[in-house]
Image (cartoon, rainbow, N blue to C red; front, side):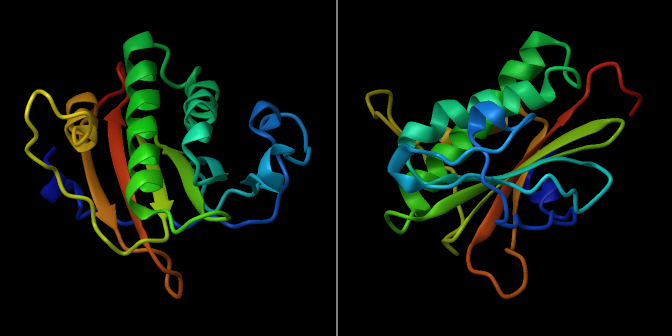
Length: 184
């Protein structure tokens, strides 16, 4: 699926901010985050039957590993093929890094991650507060950055953008992965 075709799918709802969960405790408990006093929200209240995760992370590069770990933990049973699981975690990490690098407005800003799953498809949405849409760039071999969307495109079955929830700023960038073994 191409990005332009993928953009036609309906967007996911945006995250809510009403929990205090640390990344390590997402599945089991609530704790305050000590790091910079930030809070990570995981509402635990699905907005659709297909929603598996709805969390908000500080828009700070030091949270990238926690984002990848959270996605991996939530998808381990749904994507039993290690390559698919790695692809989902890496693609989410790239979108998170893009949101932090290109869309963060400073301390206290957040990036939301939503995971949705149907019988056949996994969808990960990363939302930030910048209205500037991502666009793939041509980079030379010596460049240290600029390959994020190319990586997402290579690792997933499609990616696209969606507007934010009504009344909120920003955008949502998402990708899909077909679940291996699932009928089309």
